[in-house]
Image (tube, rainbow, N blue to C red; front, side, top):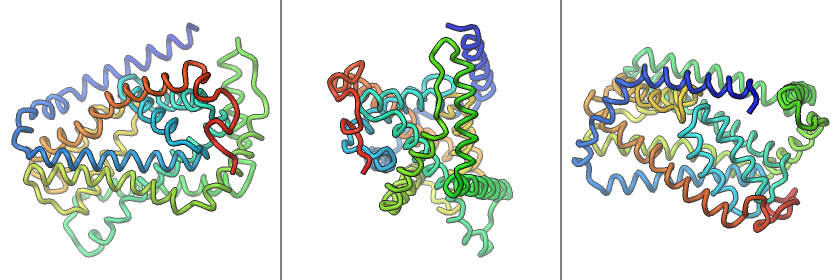
Length: 345
């Protein structure tokens, strides 16, 4: 392993360790409420698990559209396995993305289609998350009591949403932004992996794949948008169900703002899957939304059990199924070529 790689991994471990140390009080407070889960009716957990399955199904639908896959199997198994991997290693988001890309290619999805499709689906899903606070605008406009911190989170999300929308629109309308991104990524990759054969033509490939993705999503844009929205709405309903399960009855609009703020904290690449940041963020923002301290802690624990911890063993099973079906080099599932797992349509 190259010294640069060792240093980078070491730095990630240090950052993760320091972050978890600083967040330990919040984590201990949440897990300290484990005994109180006995007071929740088991049917609430059945409902929360069903909502989470629906949330994941929406994500699978968006990815399947974006990468033009014929089969659901490689999308489901690769997403579950990479999602679980990203929740147990430092730098989880990048590690999960690299793992899913490799699994999709192993299943027969062309590399360019996998890369462009994953990027497009991720931007669409994240953009939908940033638009969630717009649903709470009526509550703010009508004079509902909203803590200033939640309002600030909503404003920050709106600013990022506008910036992402502008960047995405530029990449769609003009080739130059994609060419700049492609040249930069190609240069960085060739400099870091000097022992491997240099790649070329990445900007042109990005433009070709963008055109294909736009063609696919142009015909099925409503399916992609519905799936992206469903991914977050069902996740939000899981948190709302957890709150009702512990006897809290907060305003749904304020819980939406708290959910949004916590999800933004979860995107920080300092701990795997935002571990600690989401727990601390949720308990704090739910308190700002008017939920009692005890109820917010128990509800956060119940929500994280079904949305964070339960998918980890599911991802392990998915990884085994993917390996059995597609083999190490894709020999069983269809090695090379778009027809094995995707189509240009």
